[in-house]
Image (cartoon, rainbow, N blue to C red):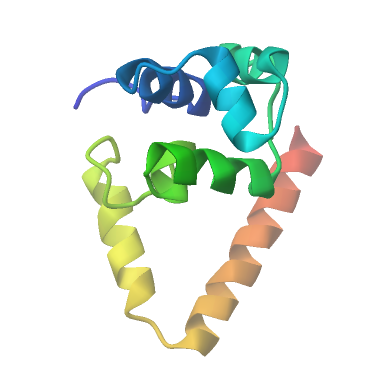
Length: 114
């Protein structure tokens, strides 16, 4: 697949349409309002709770990682990212923790630098 990865909003919309569910059907199934589902699909509401993401993944019978676009084995991920994830999985827990701390440091620096 070429182009940028699909957004959560796009994936949610496509899954709903593919399963022929209305906004209200999804809202009823996961316990939110129809307007909230609409806002999620349009990207108006960002950062849904993990609880909601899990409910949506269960409803559509997909993995949470696939829904939020963080599945490193997904076809829309660059090969370099898949290789990095594969390498990460093969490290011992201590090394993974070190990399996690490095990533947190880099994220904080990026936020600080703007």
